Image 1 (cartoon, one colour):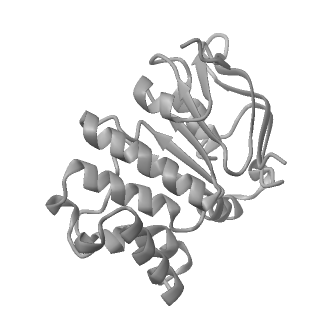
Image 2 (cartoon, rainbow, N blue to C red; image 1 turned 60 degrees about the vertical axis):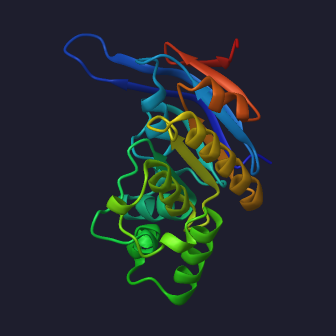
Length: 226
């Protein structure tokens, strides 16, 4: 059974004239353990789709369910809690807090419910080790390379054991070797955690590593042609 089901998803923005249509009827299903690359040119709707998938923006039509829940039927506090528990985010700009250590940055999502408990710290330590940064856990972001900072972002996205991880250009700022390593790391952890993974990318190399590729053009999804 798919844990992410999207049907006829639409997003438009009001203008002085006709509404501006960005997403024009997106259909998508993804199950635990599935991974998917979404490619497309700038202005095709990738960022808007990612924001709606991450429940950061509301659709204007269609339906969205994740783990049998319609997140957009929840109130603001419930939605924030649902997002934190079910969705992990990895961004091109990793948004690490410069004053915090690697371990503390990984723990940030757990702080939504107060101070991290022992189980949270143990999970963070495990993830830091899995992304190859055990000997850097007390370093701050300024002391890390770009590839290492992206590894911290990967670990942080997984701290709450989400069922869905959304990655927005996760290798966009990395050289080829580091990009390859981050792609392999993402897929290795995704398989081990049995989560669903969606990667939005301009990189054909990264897209080719994933099990399925879709292309977004003019607000519509279709099978990638390459």
